[in-house]
Length: 174
Image (cartoon, rainbow, N blue to C red; front, top):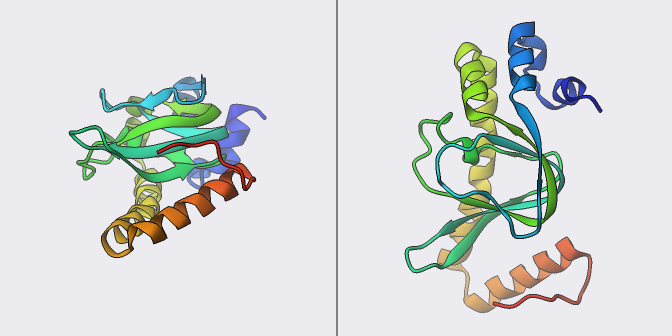
């Protein structure tokens, strides 16, 4: 599917953009492939937006002593807005994004998306709504850590991994 057609069906704000802004987004979009476990975003600046076409990305936070906590996962059709935190000035925490499996993504540069976002309230609203919708996933995770016992969290994790892998046999460690 051509990129402009993909954006037309994917972005609800596409129809309100001027042709020059549509062109700007298309010209500043690259197709990226990430191998399993490859970093997508590592807090070394404002990377831009990623739209998952194939595969799965994992967003997580990293403590000072190296412990990771998965905030949520992105599947095909999902957008990674937190890798473009410079577009969302209210995001002040660091997240990391890795390819959980081999993944193909569209990458929109932060500068191009930021420019268009600054000109159209519809684009800014879309970015904020996308970020806020993921906030409920993060709050669910906090609730799990704060209020559920370890054995219940472990059981929920194993069931989720089993569903993601489509198997009752999991090849994972700690």
